[in-house]
Amino acid sequence: MATSTIAPTPISVILNKKDLGISAFSTRSGFSIPKCRGTISKKICSVMTPQQSERKPSTTGSVKTGMTMTEKILARASEKTQLIPGENVWVNIDVLMTHDVCGPGSIGIFKKEFGENAKVWDREKIVIIPDHYIFTSDERANRNVDILRDFCMEQNIKYFYDIKDLSNFKANPDYKGVCHIALAQEGHCRPGEVLLGTDSHTCTAGAFGQFATGIGNTDAGFVLGTGKLLLKVPQTLRFVMDGKMPDYLLAKDLILQIIGEISVSGATYKSMEFVGSTVESLTMEERMTLCNMVVEAGGKNGVVPADSTTYKYLEDKTSVAYEPVYSDEQARFLSEYRFDVSKLEPLVAKPHSPDNRALARECKDVKIDRVYIGSCTGGKTEDFMAAAKVFLASGKKVKVPTFLVPATQKVWMDLYGLQVPGSGGKTCSQIFEEAGCDTPASPSCGACLGGPKDTYARMNEPMVCVSTTNRNFPGRMGHREGQIYLASPYTAAASALTGYVTDPREFLQ
Image (tube, rainbow, N blue to C red; front, side, top):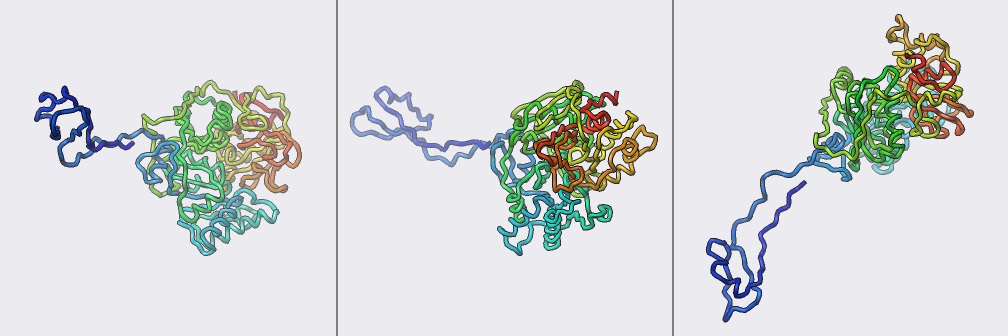
């Protein structure tokens, strides 16, 4: 906040006989009195300060207000020393991501506005990841990937994770899978940076202590050409989560609790900052789950302070230097919410909204038709490990079709390579097979967004599904009359074993 100074100005006073006593203006006062002709009357005369050198402003320094993490990141990216919520600033972008659904539109806008032969602002700061409608015979979906490929060759884009052989994803070493998980695994998420993506769940990357948010095709087209975007600084909501995390809870339960508390519009264009001993105890993948669904509360971005867990995850993933930032002690938060995590229970979000919160045990009479484990929210390695833990503890077979869609090629390999603790050396894939689940599918967004009719695990008729995805709006996973219960991998696996929405404590205690 800048200080204001007042320059010396003429001072006018009303003089009368009493005012003109000698004691009123001594020579030490610094004032001089203009000489008045004739007798003194009650007229207005000017009393002026004598001419002197220019007065300098105070040198005590400008007044600074504490800033939140989000404000600091945007201040640095806009080359400002101070920002407050509501300000609009031009921000320099560190990474821009797009995929097969929005990439072609963004590319079209870029070419229209900057020219057919225009070059992108920085070919090494653009990440293009086909992931949504990949394993399909739909010609328009396939064409979208072709458009991405042509553009990346034309622009010599460094980070394009291509797929050509749709019959066998393993034949495509560059192919990754779900963009939000691939961004983290490939080292594109770094503390203190600004990451934008043409997908609403780009906010997932806030788990790394950076500003990450989704943007539209028009904005992405502009960023492709300039590397900048005009952003409004959001206010920040702070969520303090303390207490020991019970063995039957996962981060999905935490974010469903928060969304149920504040509603799907409770954080509209707000930053959601997650702190507290519980958050500090979470793994990076669990922090990603937490930040992934802030957009379901209307949030602009979610953010977790970087710490040793963050740095350890990044050790073998990036050589790019980064500088984390943290909220000042005197930072101003619009609201603060506190949760004792030790007292929470497993949750679901009933149809047809992520804030339609209910205890899993309250829905035990809801008969289901299928279970879906996958997506950027619930298709990470640790999500499948959690599901395997429930299947292993039960020793039973599933009673409904259970679809498994790894988020990325790395996750798929983990299912076949990593041993599940306490299993006697078994992998997730072995446990899933013994439980009667479907064979893990090719990594992609799968049926989360519905997709073409031949998309694996798409609901092409009205069904009731327990899913580890992030949205349960009508038609979200296919059929408009389908009913989706959002849940953690624990709850999803428990429900698969009974054929009803089931509290995982039935098998984990």
